[in-house]
Image (cartoon, rainbow, N blue to C red; front, top):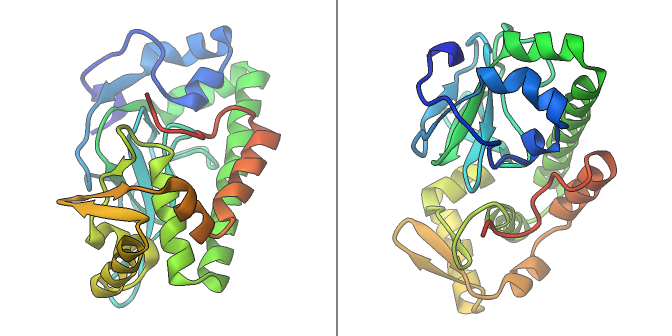
Length: 251
């Protein structure tokens, strides 16, 4: 569905840090064209080859994920995007084919903006164009860091990193709505392997599991088991777009 056809026009500024970073005049350029809905987990935003005609902004505890399809039929997730950013048409001018699959990782509110409206606003405002260019730089840094992480860090380190990364963007008392299957996709491994790592963390008192979710019992202990990739990304966000990257759970 094209963003201009979406139901649910919005009123107050959404709970998305990138949109909240815009000054009032820049936000006014795009606000009439924003719409909101609440897609469910695993809903598809783009398939490879689709025309990218809409920017999607996760709000609150919602998450989107970039997945790269492989020849063996598996999708490997590269990065998560929450309320710190957006997916679709950030780097390009839109209407170019999507390279990856982009899905809703955790369902909830998403705000949508037609690419044409964003590009018109960028043409009018240097400051708005600057914010999105800076975010594109941060998004690229996440991708670089993810590539390095997959190459050099252990499964245990990466598991802890993904759980902490999701926890920083989600609601509730240290509960991450992440199944073993979803975690396996994040790691690019089989479900049984992901389950073994979670069992190790359970024995160490770091996490517990509930149906469809992981409960973090010792956040600091889990952080100590994680690689430093999240911290590297956060530090870059702070240098380029201070205050945009989420550092604690949504209240």
